[in-house]
Length: 202
Length: 202
Image (cartoon, rainbow over all chains, first blue to last red; front, side, top):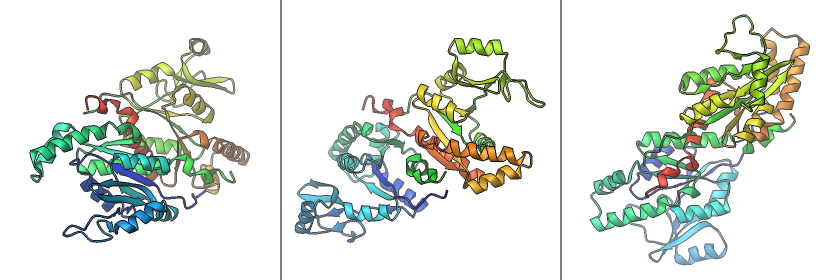
């Protein structure tokens, strides 16, 4: 009754700017190095310190539009004249090999993933409070007050999409938040729907 | 955005005789002493070493049938001329106080709980294999061969009800099985449906 090799899980993480998502993801990947963290395709120019295939897959507009035409994206969007997208093929290959795949995408992209992959696990990371989110955004010391106000407004808008997510994780401490995500993945792996083979030959 | 005090979770555990469910439950309760383990009502006589309110709530047939008439059971059944049942009121009170409640009941009882409490979390505990289940049943050295064969047949029948459960936990080692159940409870607690209040005032 050992389960057959099953499909990997598609995990989508979203959360407002400043919530500490990157830190939670780093902690999660250090605990679960078997998870494949999906790298987006983009047409924007690499910034200093960014490497192709590490931060993004940097491609030409022509290449990107060809991928759109061939329906090769799980989701894509255009921001400030640049495309950003998640390759369906890369993810399908990993999932078919039984590897769990993690996507860090914003709320509109997550909604598109939900449509195309109903079994995807959607997790929204919340700050403990908006006051704390404001503190964290100010603490970066990198943004103008106006930019921070804009981020807080966007955060409130994004939070309205929480009902589209399966799980809500409050990033109070990074280790607790990563621990909750790991518990969610363990639990999802125990779902009976993934173990139909356990009933075979019973 | 701290979540309001919410309802406790109703957790149903089932699994074939010999799977080691009691040991898993003991481990779970030692890790999560906040969980209330529900004690069934029964009309059968206490056996040596059994205490009222500890192993069962021992009641008269008259009392039990009065409770049936007043629809006071979440589920009940009659085996070999004795009644066994789970009090709805006791469980409702605990859940309303935000306490998680654990029920150890067989597959028919679990199906009734699912009907009355759609939010209940149903977990089926499996042996690693039927060979291993047979070994465990023989290892007890307490039952006749015929009794063991009967238990194995019942186990196969019970396993056909697995699709009615949300989660499947293989009891390979007790600590791993208890750990998976704890992860399931953590994950269920993160479900967005329980955090509607997080979106209020956003």
